[in-house]
Image (cartoon, helix red, strand yellow):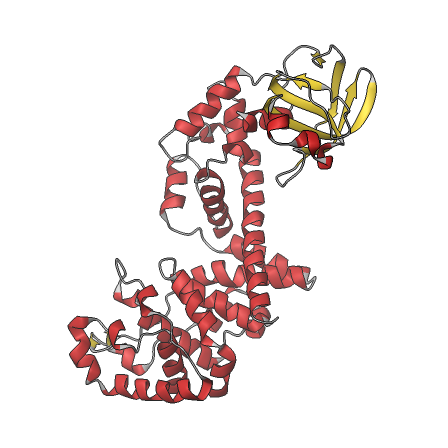
Length: 432
C-alpha cells in the first residue's frame, strides 16, 4: 500500500542494513524532505547521497516501478527534478521526460508496520488505538492535543474569513453569521447559517431599535411565518393568534420594502429537540440579543473576561415566547434565558474562533492569546466524544482539551487518517 510506504519513508523506518539502489549504488538519506499533499512529487527538497554524491531534489514513491508510467510521470516535466524513486517492488526502469534514468530504491514495508496498520484500520471500536492511550506520557499527549487545538482554530479561522469575503468584507456580518450558526447547537447549525446569510442584516439594521420589527424580520426570513411551517396540530390556533397575525402583517410590509424572500422552512429540524431548542425560541433569543446591541463584534472584542462575555451574551425570548414554544402552542410561563452552559458553547464556538481569526488577520496577538486563555479557562464540553476518550484513559479537563479531541475524532479517526496522527504513530511503532 503506497501510503504505508510514504509513512516508512517519512519516519525513516529503514531496514537495519545498508541501503542501495537497484543498480547497486550506496544510498544515505540525509533528509527525507517535505511531504507534499498536493499535486507533484511526494516529497520536496530531500537530501540524499547516492554513490557518495549528494543530491538535493524531490522524491517520488510508488508501490511498483511501473506506476511511474501508469501515472504519466515519464512525460511530465514536473517530475524531471526527482532524484530518487522509492518503491516496494522494482519491476522496471524509470526515466524523466528528457530521458534521464532515475535511481530507484527498493524499500520494503516492515511486517510490524503492516500488522499494526491493519489492526487500526480493521478495529471496530472507537478509537482504534485505545490500547496505546494509557501508556502514553503526558508530554506526548499534551503536545498532540495542543497541536490539534491550534489546527481546529485554524480551520474555524478559514471558515470565518470565507464568511467575511461573502459579506463584502464586513466582519460584523461575518460575526453574526457565525453566532447564528452556533445558535443551532449542532442539529440546526446549517439551517441557522443559511438563515443568517439570507437575512440581509444591513436591512434589519434600519429597524434595530424596534424589537417587534426585528422579530418579524427574523421569523419571516426563517420561513417560520409560512402556513406550511406551522405544526398542523396547532395550525388553527396559530392562524387565529393575534401575535402571529401581527408578525405576518409586519413581515409582508418589510418584504415589500426590501424585496425579501424567506428561506425554505423544511430546512429546520425538530426531531429529538427539547422545546427550548426549537428554532422559534432560538430565533427570538437572537432577536433580543441583536436588539440589545450587547453582542456586536465590537462589543465582544472589548470583553476582557468570562464574566463580561456572559453578560454580553445574556438573552431571553420576547413576551409571546415566554408562554409559547410554537405558534399557537402554549406552555407554562418561562423567560427561556440562554443558559450558562449554552453561553459557554457560544464562547467556545463563536467568540474564541472570532477572536483568533480577527487577531490573526489584523496582527493583534493579544486577541489570539485571549482566545487560547478562554479555552483554558472554560470546562471541557460534555458530549459523547469526550466521554469515549475518558473511557480510554484520556480525560479532557478544559475546553481546549475537548476541542482538540473533537478535532481528533472528526479529522483523523473518522477519516481513518491514523498515519497522520501522533497517537497512530505511537501505535504503529509499538510491538502490540
